[in-house]
Amino acid sequence: MRLAIMTVGKTHSGKTTFANQLSEALADSVVIDQDLQAEFLNRHYPPLLPAQGPNTLKYALTQTLVEHAVRQTGLHLIISNSNLGREARLEWLDYYRKHGFTTVLVFFNIPEDHLRIRIRESGRSTKIFRVSLTFDELLDRQKAAFPVAAPSEDEAEHLFTVRLPDDAESVIRRITGLAGGETEDGR
Picture 1: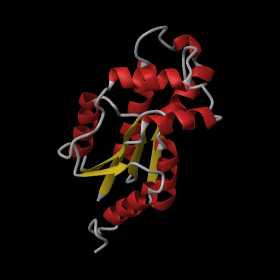
Picture 2 (picture 1 turned 180 degrees about the horizontal axis):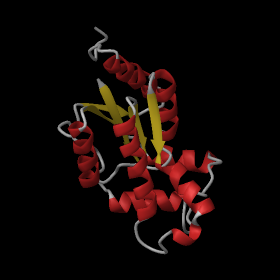
Picture 3 (picture 1 turned 120 degrees about the vertical axis):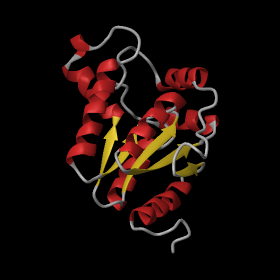
């Protein structure tokens, strides 16, 4: 069984850290992190980026990487980006199911005050942005665009929620158990 694990959450909720930790624990997996593609494009191909609106080039690069991993490898996929838009998330989940994946959503439901603290304490680069933007501004945009971002139980075969940093370790164990054929309770 191949897993397609998608993170869902706002900036600084721990998606990238989680994805990298899960990749270390889950054999035969790859992390596809849209922030890496954004930084790459911003650094090497700024003239090709749209001046306004969605970063269609970033999305196309992500789609290419995903399609290659789906069709040319036997790897589990860990998709690390916000995935806050329900409609797009459902389209991707359907795509993975059509290609034989078991779908897993990991929702990072971190309180906003914790996110603001993480942003203040973070040394994270803003090179992922095409325009001058701070992570506080990004969080404000995400709140406005996706006031209710929580995925529902019926979207994927498995849904896990991370509310506290300590929850991530338990979720990683449960996902690696799924990949090994165990049930959620470890049997």
